[in-house]
Length: 259
Image (cartoon, rainbow, N blue to C red; front, side, top):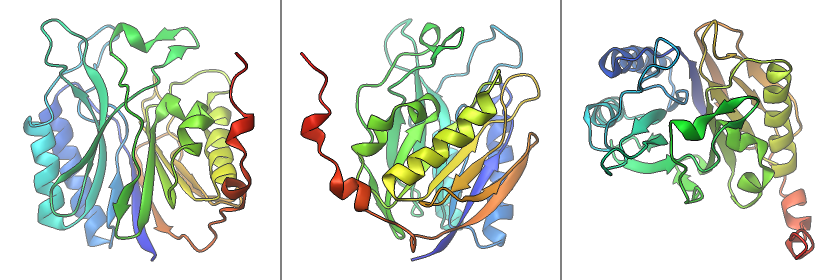
């Protein structure tokens, strides 16, 4: 079954209430155009406006998550959106969490990022703790949805273990030499090797994040791409080109690391 998916490439500020208003305005516009699945970036709930600033933290039942659930229920739409989840431990680091809300307003999944971005001179683990649970693909009205968060895109094992019909990637892809090339290449590679389309939505910021939200078919063909400013990319979620050949021909018993 085909449907319209929107990748909402936005820039978040530190104030979660202001970001929720931006999300709400985007949802209303996207739904008026027929969207049924809307993907927002990693860190959409809160991102510090100055280097070294604090991320606002909330629980999975806080006002931001509840606001997403209300929006999804009101408009009958699925939402994917990043937040900073308070860990519940005194003085403990938060989780970098992505919420997936179904069209009834229910929290279908809360994925705590498992692979933190300790690379290219940055240490995400200084600010966040890693989750330890792989993402279980979700049943949606359009097929089984797999998911990965940003740096997880660099680990094909995250994708190969998920038997799904399409992937969504929510990211805040940091600027740097060759980074836009890495983003596009990895999205295309994950689509080709998985035999399913991959839809990648990334944060945008003039000094921090690249933008360039994009989608790729199982053939490696680019289905659409945004530039380096805020915008919404409207696409058809089409599974007609899906190809399970590579998945079927895998021999995982050969891929284990030597002892």
